[in-house]
Image 1 (cartoon, rainbow, N blue to C red):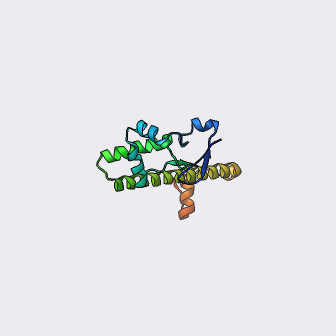
Image 2: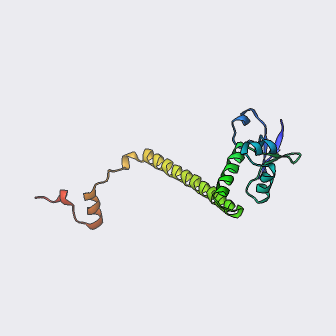
Image 3: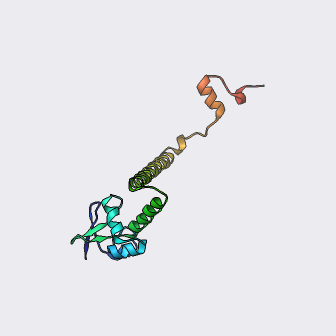
Length: 150
């Protein structure tokens, strides 16, 4: 099995499921450039500017994944809209931060839902349906309309 170093840290080893993994670095720079419709030197420039971090083989050759190709398309789209490389980097960084925060929020929401499910299952008998008249009685000491005799 071949080992490929990711620029962001860690190693990836080729495996049968690598064909489906969009993060798996499978394209050499010339193929990635052709698929993205740019010159290989453009990809090197994106890397120098910090816009793109391709994986590296043990020999140091760049390898691009399908996720890298989508990132190249996004860089091209932002550049075509008039952003310079600094602006593109800022947009990419903010987008990544937004995704991270959304993932964090979704995980927190799922933890809260799990806690509610656990507490509901554990204390189902102790739960009382909300009654606004009882809530008013508890809050003010005065009964609600249902408790006042006519």
